Length: 143
Image (tube, rainbow, N blue to C red; front, side):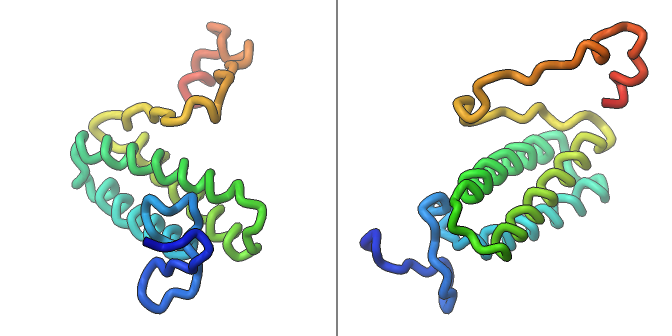
């Protein structure tokens, strides 16, 4: 077993350390973001070609929320280089684009995202009054 001070490589010949936030996947930030973006691209193809069943879209939504949570934990580390911050933001964008595509997928809506760590979001989002009025029903349907 590795000691905490020892460098643990994620894949052979990778010189980047595996942060404690990514111990569960065993990858450094670079390789984790790369693998998430590759997975998002493949899932996007499945959705675009209408090959994703309702069950598969539910699996995708779960994967998206789990990856977003891991990325949020990694990004809270203040010792990240600008390049890693950029990669994390690009990966968040890939996750958000896929989530939007899941919502637009024909044959049903994407399942509601479940927050696995409710302590991260202690207060529920409040809908503005102008969205609640009956006269803005057309605006509400677009939001």
